[in-house]
Image (cartoon, rainbow, N blue to C red; front, side, top):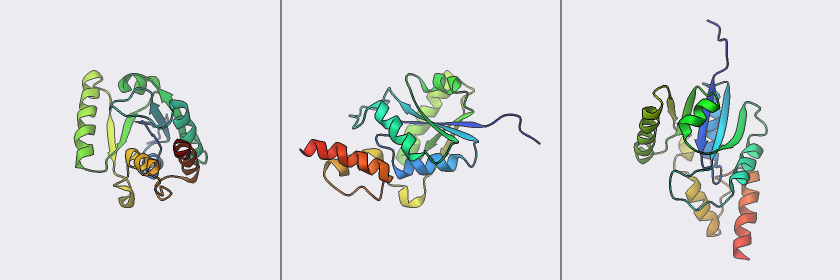
Length: 169
């Protein structure tokens, strides 16, 4: 059977900053989708103090995925299910690191499916050596002056060093 159109995945998140775990999920999503739209949420679902502006987070993602033309990085506002249809995506992909992630993501997926019964969600686990990693942990280690180089790409590391070096000055 031949497909007549491409399969598009939507990978939403705050990406503050984008970690190697996020990168792993986005790149592995290309195994099941022809194209991935990495969508930075302008409206937070949880109370967070962002380290980077929405525009800076999109720029970081574009730098990280500059080598992969099948990954598009953009910002969005509002409800995920609305943006899912605007982006003409076939499904939402989310990463799961632990049981606690599953509980939260399952609840969010169910709420979104209540609003749009056609919405589909796929959950991927990151590579085992990245399973503990979160953007909030990376931010905290960076704020405290720790080495985050094992957790982010070189371009993100440079931005983090500039950002948190500025706070120390």
